[in-house]
Length: 185
Ligand code: SF4
Ligand code: SF4
Image (cartoon, rainbow, N blue to C red; front, side, top):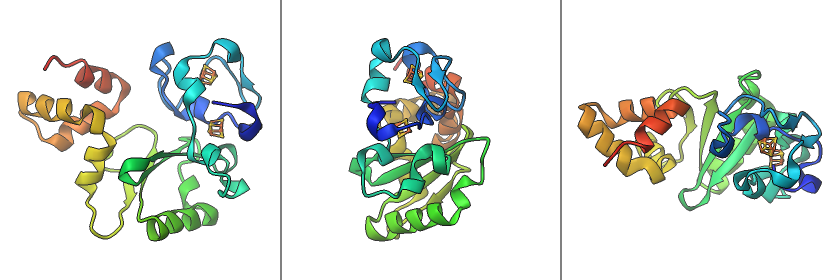
């Protein structure tokens, strides 16, 4: 979480987001989180927590009901690729099907031509529900999501004799990400 004022009593990113600095995997509550109140180590929290801004935090035009603790989804934008990741609270896997969220997805895909990727837990992007605007492909979107690690994943796939999709599947888990990103190239 970043600044308390815009976040209010929301602490959802302290659950959905992985924080490598403190070995916190995604989709479990951080041990430092006072749920619904804030960070117990606020003054010394990791830099990645200080700088993290979800889409709701940085866009005051988004409706109140889309605040992550209310809609149970943390939206995150990969701006240069017009991709919105919707990280759904695994305890509320259907949260993305609500009327408010569906309206937001429609708005993002139609007005901004952004792809919206629904991530329920960490499984595989291959299986993820994606709202893909015309002219874009699932594979292109997956590659963009993994842009930073994409080259390593491609090399890893070649080395292992597996497809890019399978390498992404392996990389999607926390241990998999470490394995692929640490892979010596
Ligand atoms: S999910 Fe967004 S609004 Fe909620 S605490 Fe994190 S940055 Fe703030
Ligand atoms: S260290 Fe604090 S801000 Fe970072 S995830 Fe944990 S509770 Fe949230």
